Length: 391
Image (cartoon, rainbow, N blue to C red):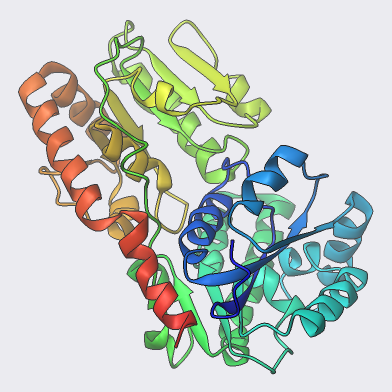
């Protein structure tokens, strides 16, 4: 953190406290804050659905001049979501918005007098969009509307109706919120295409990165053939986990074992546990799960954005099989840096190709690691954001 006046004051606003790093938005915010702290005096404002632990606060205080957390109680968030059902804004914007928190935010911003405000995700925008005394940047991160549209295609009944309604509202909101911010960022070219604003080409692509020093290749002995990681309460990850176990695994040898690793496994994911399937829950060091398997498999069919899990697996040296959808954001060279499959039979074939051919596996692994080092190190990928804010 910095107290010298030569540093511009930057308010970073997040809809979740960016630690621990079990969710994609938290991981993105944490690493961006870490890089931004070398250039700006950071004042972190975070909504939190739980009381933030002292150790987690201390982790962010390493990089921030001030850390302000605003507890969003269950009553506040669900009442906000409920009343938004009858309005025009997205339900998730209402879920994270509270007027009493907004008043505190307004007072603090007026006191700090920042040189710039950086809001992560459109669900943060209601708190800062009307502040005009300094430039502002909105990080769309993903095209959230597209994610809801994809989920609505497989949903049924009331859930389908809600998803379709939320998709349309998100699409309108992603468009309208553009006008309130001077700068705009998003995680990939694929996501930018789904922001339907006439000036969407002005949205700068700021991808996620990976700490390539942290994720080192390991020759640790393998306890499984396959691994898939992610927040296991997140619907696209639940869908992917079920797909692997229910659609792909039956096509493979009965001795094939898979690890499903990640925080907060849903009941649906826990039910997948068997002699072939290990469900870990929260893991203190996710590297131990990547290095425990021979192939990383990620059948992502409904998510949006750039998959951190793929960056991490590639950085640590585990060859990856994923979908065209996921690789559209990633941009790896097919059959050189990643293998692609879009149906269960193709996943089976690509998995077996890697398991049965050590030379091919090592070739993909080496190329993938170099690809991530060249394109997704946090320092260079955050450079564009620093330039936007410092303009």
